[in-house]
Amino acid sequence: MPFLLVFFVFAALAGISYYLASRFYHGFACFSPNVRFWPILTVFLLLAVIMTLGFGRSMIPFPDGIKHVLGLVSAYYMGIFIYLLFFVAAADVILLVPRIMKLSFTDYRYFKGIISVAVLILTSITCVCGFINARQIDHVSYEIRLENKKDISDLNLVMISDLHLGSVGSEGRLEKIVNEINAMNPDVVCIAGDFFDTDYASIKNPEAAMEILRGIRSAFGTYACFGNHDAGSTNKQMVSFMEKANIHLLRDEYKIIDDRLVLVGRLDGSPIGGYGGEERKELSEFLKIEDENLPVVVLDHNPGNIHTYRGDVDLVLCGHTHKGQLFPANLITDILYTVDYGYYRKNAQSPHVIVTSGVGYWGMPMRVGTDSEIVNVKFVDSKSVAG
Image (tube, rainbow, N blue to C red):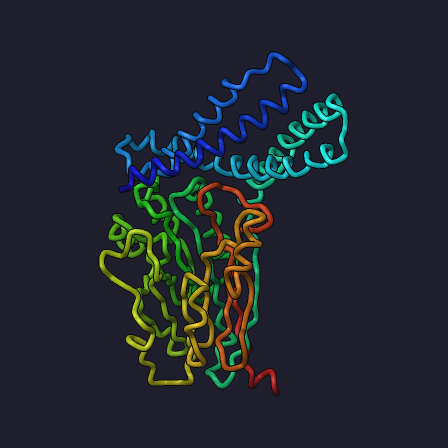
């Protein structure tokens, strides 16, 4: 079945590659009659093969070195491929204009050639800027006003999500992320899922990564929930990694922090490859809090679950969406989710919700129209505000 999936993925990529090759051939042929179609198509198809093998490398018995090279090339090309398709499709729409205006064949031919060059320039600029932007990390802050709950206004909570450890460049950025978290002097550090990039074997140096993560400094520790990518056949290795990295994993469990805060971690409802038979529970099955004055903060990777929470939860921290990661995908996530990024609260009886765009990225090491970020949550006591 996995190989059948790989075949269909390649078939789709090959079809799109043929479309792109034909468009560039006709565009460049406007400038020179010596341009040939088959060399252009061969390059596109070769890259389609590499991209398919790169993203299906966990299912193919290649040596680790070859897998890492395939993953690197396919990740970068995937971003380029997406924007080539985007701009070529846009160019086809633009090319309808001279046809409607009934330009002469010569004028139309040169217009098509200029548009083809413009596509390459726009794709290059967009991708280079996207690759650079993905490596930058923004800091975003929110103030959450807690009503009729124990005062935790002195508690500094720092949150990240979607590190996707094992993806291209993720290990190289890890020390920077830890240093920036520590610079915020957190009392509690929360990781809202997708810590891993599905396949534990994609991490080049797990021991070095653990050592860096053990350097996170906070008063009450680092806590995490699992997301949909923190699953599959290597899930047990992921769990072991978290333990060795001094990250407290909450799998439909909760921890009372300093007798002042209840921190809940949820399993994702749609893990890729499953959690070895472990499934998401209902919140009422395991959350039993005697002191109702304690604020309750929930780590739940997917913001699609926020409608399941009521007034007994004060704050839900989510990730997953990446805010689309690449324009115009952010327009799609905005439609799909009640909130795909930022702060949200349905009404006064509902919990506060914060959705982060994530500190890492999935697939291509690229962000266009979105940013990688670390979130700082500060609590405001409603009584002190009223006073």
